[in-house]
Length: 422
Image 1 (spheres, rainbow, N blue to C red):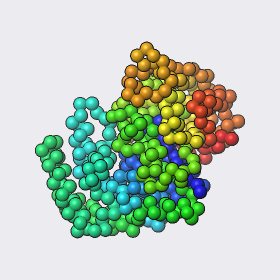
Image 2: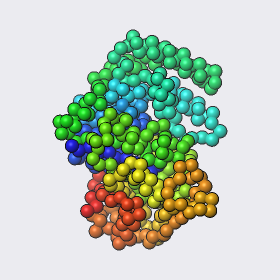
Image 3: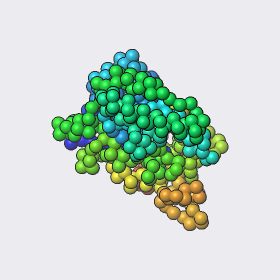
């Protein structure tokens, strides 16, 4: 049995797609387990950039099967757009992609409500307005539309008619927005059935059968630990569980199927949108990290907030997810910094703590330790021994204080800029 889970260990954008692409080489099936088109997973192959919002990043390996699990909320129009684009580039996706019949769909009224709710808030959450939250809300309210519903168009039309009466009432009377007709929504679903109907299956059954057959499975999450709706910096979080629990719920696999949990972490920290960020670097240092790291959202284009490495954050990610190893990305971005700060804990109301607080992060002032930096360009390094001494020291320092082995190191954006830490 071999089932790996790749989890973002910070606030998302850690380089998970690159790591998924790396681990896919030794996998047979890649499964996306939660989130939706609010995630932009970027993979660079031979200087060509691919950005995936729904289709698993492993699709660039032409002999691999990709699965969109039941925990994902799927935007039919965007999925079709990704599918068509990849097919034009020579990737035969139609024969290698399966979509869970239990995955909930994002429809135009979800996006309209998402945007309206964000406008309505005095304090903005920073949502991508892709309809993610409203779709998950419908799932919990038991009025959601699932991918498998397209196989009974008569019943589906009745569902849409009921849901639209509720959604249009809210859009029109509360938010003063345009409403949607039954035909508008049904036409989207008919096209989804035409293009993707042959890919929709019971993926839970498929994955368990695959495990019994000895296939190697890789689970791909979106966002990161600190954006988890239960364990993150609520309310500035995503609407799903990017953590290990979400991996199990979003695929139908069980804890005994998992044998590796790999946390992906940048060599520094970034965050998109509002919310607490104790180690945020303001001024020249933050801007330098942003420019050197190309820190602009692949989904929104928004500049990411940048800051220093946070040990308590990573320790908490390890505890919640049971991380068996770490993949350290973007180490090259720190080249040129004379001193590199690392948060060892926080001061909250005058008291020093060494853990990630659940509800007082706004009041947390980081307690830093400064390490010596390096000037060398490390993009050509192929093993840890090739790195400058201070870069090696930085890796060892993180390992020893987080308590998890760094098994993979990335020193640039391309596939070739990745090596095992032996």
